[in-house]
Length: 303
Image (cartoon, rainbow, N blue to C red; front, side):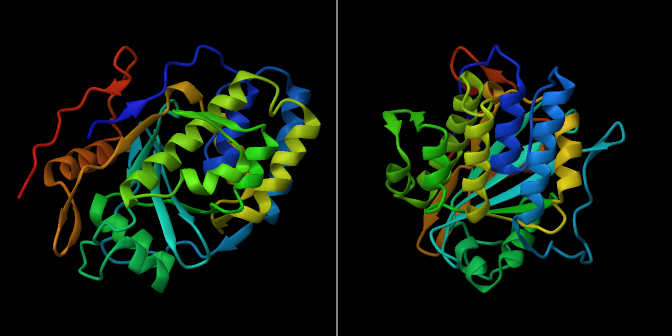
């Protein structure tokens, strides 16, 4: 399957930056207005400080090194959504380029088999989420710099706080989020990416996050449903905000092509090699705004 993207956004603004830092720990777009930006930065810093924290993945022999371009490291955020504390519902790798201009959401099914023979990503998550992060490092050959855990059932209040979301097929209220994210494993991950993109687009189109009262409601709704690793501090988030130039409408989704066998679900070898190359070289295809897809060859089925 080829990566897909929403139509190109034309408008830069504070709201793009706010939305990404809230939802996936990444941010976007330069802004004017130092006083307003300082107020928002301080409020986000306060919120980041009270988010629930988990241990980061410790160093181990053979761990992939960060990818640096011209002295700046690309960043991979491992986003894992859950229905409860132990059930992994979807998996995304949010890759922020070293240039800080591109964000790619890589969608992987939670039933994907880990390369170390320990079972699926969902199985490893039940045992220890850090095992899932390590399995994905082995699979992709790239470092998972940060973890973001999202409770899908509690994310409903975030959706309501920004007035609902437009997705293919209609408009979603918070009460409809859980149903929207149900279905087959790969579909859940792809729809999670669609939901995040829709939230970013919603923020960039109006006053959803520029009104201070609404902005506070969004932040308050996020706290109960997001857990991050201890390395994703308020200072790290602020620094990323000041560096990043991502626009919400340019975010690309890359669904990893997979094969289902009697032994489980495995990554298509051709698609996996393309993904590993893109991650380790920090080179993802640009969006084709006419077709709404990035220009990648279609992986051939492997038996």
